[in-house]
Image 1 (cartoon, helix red, strand yellow):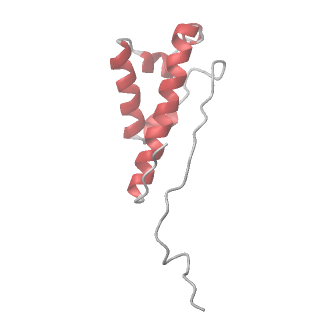
Image 2 (cartoon, helix red, strand yellow; image 1 turned 45 degrees about the vertical axis):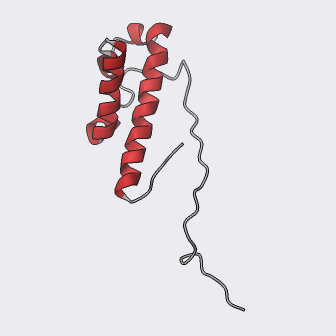
Image 3 (cartoon, one colour; image 1 turned 135 degrees about the horizontal axis):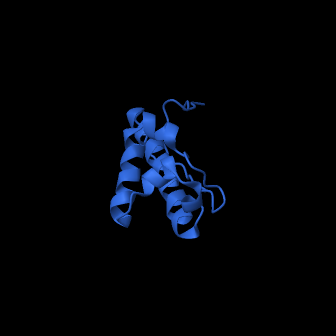
Length: 102
């Protein structure tokens, strides 16, 4: 009986899901360490700023907390930060030859 090792088997796509946090999880400085090390994350924040027409990333990274905590700002800030983490992860995976498609 011949068996095929896992190493010889063709790669199969795997299912993956991402769950992002909701309102109340925001805080001034969230994502700062990520932006410092990931150009893909910094680009995601820049795209959010451009799409919204406001310096959202500055509010996320520098505050003030009173502004960030307002629903009108908190919701897009959390989404922008979540997308920044996703884009950073996708970029790092791509460097390793792995494509992440949620």
